[in-house]
Image (tube, rainbow, N blue to C red):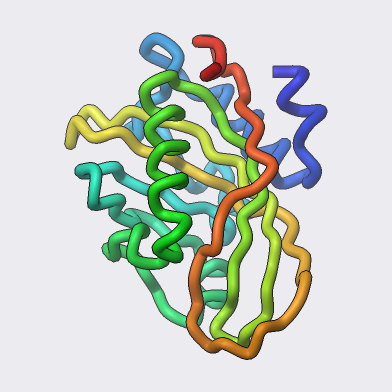
Amino acid sequence: MLLAMELLQSAGARQFMEYWDSLPKAGVLPDRSDFNPPAIYKLMPAITILEIVSPDRVEMRLVGTDLVERMGIDPTGHNYLDSIAPAARLPYLEMLNRQINHPCGRLSILKTREASGILSQVEVLSLPMSHRLSGHPLIISYFGSTESVGFDGDETREVRGFEDVRWIDIGAGVPA
């Protein structure tokens, strides 16, 4: 995990990686039942958990309070794909499938447009978890440093894409 720690820009992302790595694992993945939010309570406002229910439904199971505040709504229970710009959906699903089919971490820069029209870039560390209860894969993510990079006046909040994607070996290698 040393290489992963060198890639992470924020102290919160490094703490999140250390916590995830400390969880008991079946193979290379921890199970949702072993995830204990109070253990990382200071990070929880910047955490999401996505459940991959089907190819067209990625349900937002948990959305931290900092993220809810930035979005202006609580999207818990919503389909995450609805918040992604149409042009970015297929590349996102391909990236998500690569991460699930070849269990690994992902560090990426998320490009968003906020409801205010502000364009932002956010460092996101995403790690897989199993969920014995539902049988669906989960992705738990920490949203780190945010940088405003412009303004376009449109008031539609959306994820515009992911850049600078780096795969992190969690014990099963990384996708090609």
